[in-house]
Amino acid sequence: MLRTRIILVDDHRILLDALKSLVEPEFEVVGMFEDCQSLLAGASELHPDIIVLDIGMPVMNGLSAGEHLKKLLPKTKLIFLTAYQDLETAAQAFQLGASGYVLKVAAGTELIAAIREVVRGGFYASPVLTEGMIGSFVRAFKQMKSPYNLTSRQKEVLKLLAEGFSMKAVGENLNITRRTVAFHKYTMMEQLNIKTNAELMNFALSHLQ
Image 1: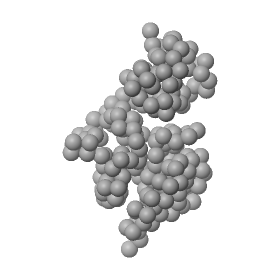
Image 2: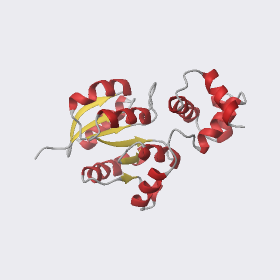
Image 3: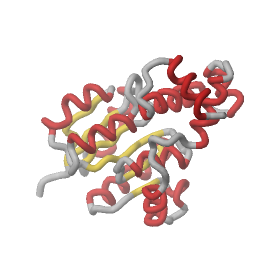
């Protein structure tokens, strides 16, 4: 019987190696990537059944890569393995077609279960997010507004940036890390097809009155 083919994606090599050791006894790891550009360039040739990828990646985040992957490899299932615990980010993941959403803090105990569930054609999200209501959780998230509309958290971040706060100051104001602020900022820019900070500020002035 052929084993399920897995691609692992994370910008930390040590974590990639640990994940490979975790999943290899049961599944076949056919590729590991440390950035999303390399993933998009090489994934098709590896014929993966499942891609496990981080969201907070440099240059191109995992959500944007996931959107490309669903067009490039429509039959391949996506499982996001991430530190982002907010429901809005999970919603974006399921809206773009993800089959799983696993928190990194629970990878050791949940990732194998998530892969097994996705192989069976189901969905998986860390119980701390769903409280056991995975079916309604996914259905509700897929019915939410398009990810191209800004979430309430994105609007909070954008409003503070438009008021002149640095990303560090925005993070302190909202009690989130600077990296999370950067994630929201660049996700907004990709969603809105905005290339420069000036364009983003103009959008904020026009839409956040």
